[in-house]
Length: 256
Ligand SMILES: [Zn+2]
Image (tube, rainbow, N blue to C red; front, side, top):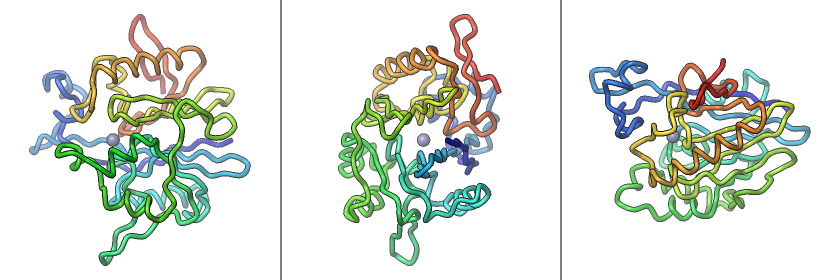
């Protein structure tokens, strides 16, 4: 099995939105905001190659599709070879790369792939409320769903040999993280832990649907990760995309 990070950033977001109630005096120590208060984040899909599958975890934005295809080409994978796409959740920065919009038409980026998310996530994306309609590209998700290429997965079950889908609600209700059991355990966190700075247990984003639930999720994920030697993959880190998860006193850290 081969696991590869495919960095497709930078992705600009308002600094306040990614750090929630954490004061700017704290987060501005590690991110320098531009004149619009935006900070540069990463967009880091992960490719898992097994003997017979090429699985993509998240796909970046629609805008980052050329970068994603370029990163895949660098590891000699064509978009048509992708067999499965697993979405940690369907926010546009995670699912947008699956659907290409051009000339008023939507086409699939990975035309031979089956795409997966949880049922809760699918329902949330197809029926967004006044707040979440800004986070989901409902039209693109409908294209996948109506095209019969978006199916639901059961959380807390194996997707494939050694690839486990762990329920991790909070950022969204239907959010999942992915664990890959190799000699070292790989932990693909999605937006439960978007950057290395969110390894602070109480650092959460303003996009999180349910902060209390996300806190519980983070505790659970850290507990699972602490049982084995773990490499964590951080979707929105720009520089430190993946590394060993270590614990110093009470705090988890990234060891590159
Ligand atoms: Zn995100």
